[in-house]
Length: 403
Image 1: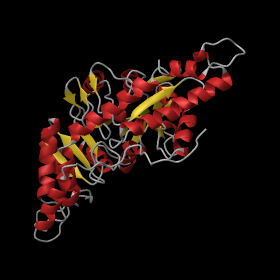
Image 2: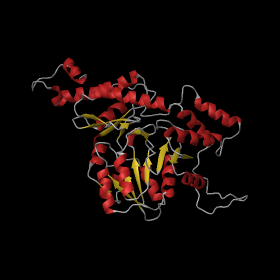
Image 3: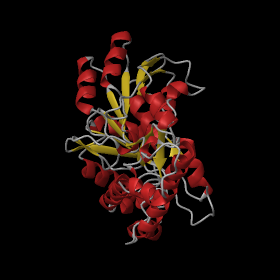
Image 4: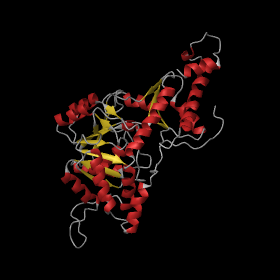
């Protein structure tokens, strides 16, 4: 069905501020020769970030993965310990569990949030005694935190929030990443704000964050010579990268607003199509709409959409393949049913780049609508509601597509 390749439309690419905030902070670092390691930008980025989300302390690190690793270490997770982890996520959530020689147990999602099922979590607690729980806020959608926090407090288990995709998301008026003992954020190139690469660990436990900064700086003891009494890691963020982050933080609210606009555009144009359902937005959840995602239950399948968009030079993506289905992790236990599997099988992440203009969004939705026209003509899809044996008119199909 694709006819030609147009301008590249990205799933979610870096978007620097129009005001040039990032370059101002980078220039200051160059002018003062504080390139690396650390420096004023790192200190200020930590302070400004913590203030923005309402945490007491933050440690700027080299990646979100490093932040999860340090959170696990700070929570006391070690060899042989069990860690509950959302199954529907990217592997960076689960990999640090293995770094600590611990044992992941994967927890299913629910359809109400697409995130960790509180019911499955309770079932897991009845079966295991974990050292920590990692809950993910997928695609900027908040998990049902009241129930999850209640479960963790009931069993006195530290809670780590993987908020890598949810910076700017609120649960009942409070930032995600601030409900648990530790919150993790990512500034990878595709995130809602970026530092090219980098992450942040936040907590209200200032002593633990200070310890993380120590570990992440090769655990160098305060001595004239190089002395190390603990295992260290090279995980600290550079002063240049932190300068980008400071500039990006100034436009976070703008990025959330544009992401929401993109999602609402798609909903207005596509939610009437047969079999299309958008990711759940609960009344207690104010998401950052990092990616606009849909699930399909009709004749059109995720691969149809992704292939058609790809042929037109447009990026899209399947929903994450659950960890318990991954070759490396499939030997570990999984608690739940098949919700995360169904979301993976039926889900599509639509292009959600904040630099997209209305004409780009119109191009995407026209390609997707074209699939429904095509499938309707070939299979007499019930959405057409026409007399069997006859073909509906183009005008009739367009009216259906427009709702």
